[in-house]
Amino acid sequence: MAVVDPVIVQVVGFQNSGKTTFVKKLLQELSNQNIFVATIKHHGHGGKPDVVEKKDSSEHIQSGAFASLVEGEGRLLIQVEKDEWNIQEQIHILCSMNPEVIVIEGHKNERFRKIVLLRNKEDFDALKSLENVMAFVSQEPLHINPNVPIWNENDIMTWLVQYINEQRNQGNCKV
Image 1 (cartoon, rainbow, N blue to C red):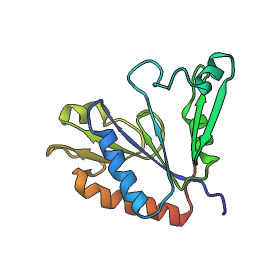
Image 2 (image 1 turned 45 degrees about the vertical axis):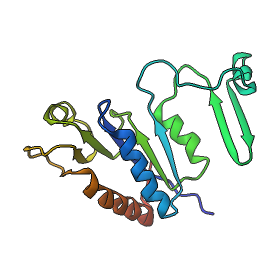
Image 3 (image 1 turned 30 degrees about the vertical axis):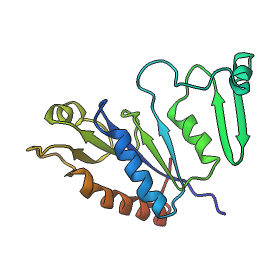
């Protein structure tokens, strides 16, 4: 299998804007087309994400390993500890698994093509200056005139999957 740079799309918005629900729907659509997708999720709630404590892999980390990998029946778990992981490092790790698409949930100030989820006009006012916005998705009708389209969630999914497929087929999927 030839290694191809993955298509990268971000889904951003404020807390409780529906990012996770939107990403899950997108993943289902892409999975239904047998597209190999990986995700990066920004843990924006403060602190470290939860891990299973008192397992050998966590004990390896606590004993000084910076990384621990566990495999069982085809499931691979990786726990890695360092002060901070930038988005490029996270993408690099995922690219070793040859995904066709990487969906990033959060990291709104990164430079990738993004879909911005809005709850209301105040969200639009706060997020309209983000870079590389492909489209806004609004839960309620907004009477604004942005430079990019505003979609409802149902209509954008077809467009977004088509966009991803076009990018995959053109092979212009640079990180």
